[in-house]
Length: 454
Image 1 (cartoon, one colour):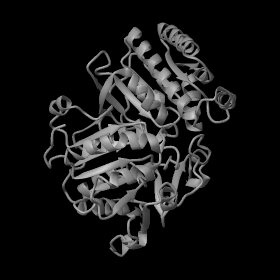
Image 2 (spheres, helix red, strand yellow; image 1 turned 90 degrees about the horizontal axis):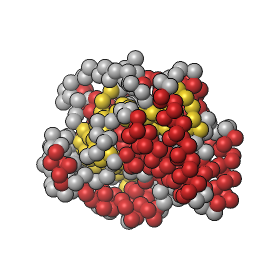
Image 3 (cartoon, one colour; image 1 turned 30 degrees about the vertical axis):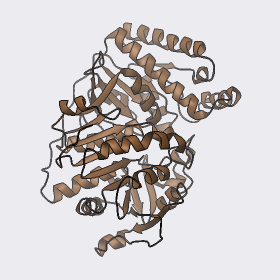
Image 4 (cartoon, rainbow, N blue to C red; image 1 turned 45 degrees about the vertical axis):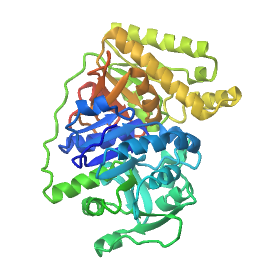
């Protein structure tokens, strides 16, 4: 890859596709040219989009082991650092999805710290604009009409792979790395204009988590990140990092306020696939059934068997989806309707009986859904689609032959409508990627109508 100039403000690497896309939308809708690549961009791709001020790469790291990270992250991190961004951001889930064995934030920090010369490592997970808050080191997230401490959150505390049992951000991440020494930059420190504390443990990575609860603390976080980027060029966090930077740039006159973009217009047909078991997605499926969508179940247990069994299931949902489209309906292919769907229990039992790991089977499901989506789009000529589920989005999107995404129309923060860039038939596809726990009940209809701020 070629060196970029200092005109590149930011590079980011996302540990899942929906989160990586969320970073791009924050920057793009603030007026900064940004693009998300599905792999490390080639020299030709960089030359094609030389105007960009921010470049990201999406991955499936959140669903992977520390060993996978050791094999894949050093090359990707170095490639992005070689572009000479003023800040390098490892993007994590805004609800901290991770554990020592799956999506380890600690291992990613160790790898990046060995490639950068940060004096301290800022960790900013909170994003008040998404109802994600950190107060005195503890994390809170909104759900419905209530804000819950993370370890009591009705969705995240029941996550099937990485259930959140700890609300202290520093403690949660420190359990994933013996090399991390973490302090807190609290709301009291911000009010008193105190600098982050510095730990003095030799041979440890010095880090600090950042409290953030409102516009004022968000702007302070952005100022802290930007003004200290020479000493601390590496940051870990959610898209709250970009929200904070944009807030600071607007407050200091570097960026003007942007007028919200309008809808992209109602689609002439849309295909949705969902691998999420979130109750939020279950509500969206229920709304969709009553509003012109055909709900088509994908039997996830078939991913526990041989390839022929899985191929048969793919054939079945493609056939059902094309029949739905021929009747003027919009197919919505799903694996489960929330955590209490009997299909979840059946799937867990099937995985156990198969001898395969959950990660392996979940990848097969995501790839199968992506294969089905490609076939449906190709045969129907439909040009808009939704993929629901953070891990599903990563595995499924890779089946479409897309190499990058750019922002098209906003919805809620973190789940906008994008334009796909590809060298093949999927170039120009309008695609939304949605985390399982995100969005209003009418989200799929909102995307069908073209997005836009309500």
